[in-house]
Length: 248
Picture 1 (cartoon, rainbow, N blue to C red):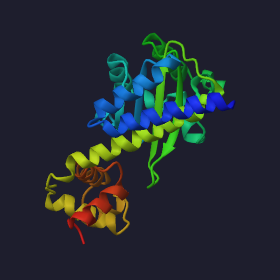
Picture 2: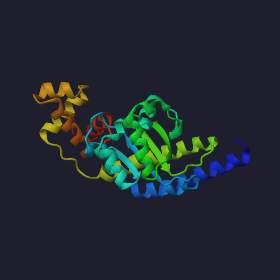
Picture 3: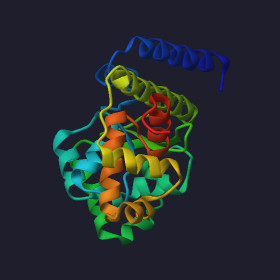
Picture 4: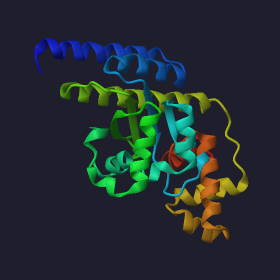
């Protein structure tokens, strides 16, 4: 990268980090991300964890950390379970490297539903895009996507977009945690019991067995616990509960 281009890229990134430090909610973060990616032709962005296969609409929507995405497309995407047939998501699961949507293995065209997902996305102004698969420190997978009718990103700016995604997601998680830090988390006796077993390393099926409930029931308790503690996964929920003294 030429020195002048490098300095410009670095300056852009530092400006973004400073703007993020001033953000007080996820709406502020989304606005700052959009402002900094607009020069590339990106009109929309979203960051989400990956729900389990078969997750319902509420669970898919609940996995979103940040978003400025076409509302009607978001509704259709979550309602029809498109995340589990989206070729970009499938590609991200198999590769940690950021990529443009048009770099996805064209083998997806053998799957009519995958072709439908990509085709319908274009109808909502998402004809081109960029995705960065990221991992939080505790191993939680997060997908960051930006999209628009036409994206113009040079190869040497791919790393900068990934850095922007990383800082935005980290700031969103921090704000989410701060927003509930001062709120007492009231867990039911059964939620506390499920969480205690999770801290012992048991999975949902094992928790269900010892609590004499179904695996679905155990998962329901754990989802409620994560929501009340502002945790994005089980590991974080256990750590937060231990910190608060909710479990031993």
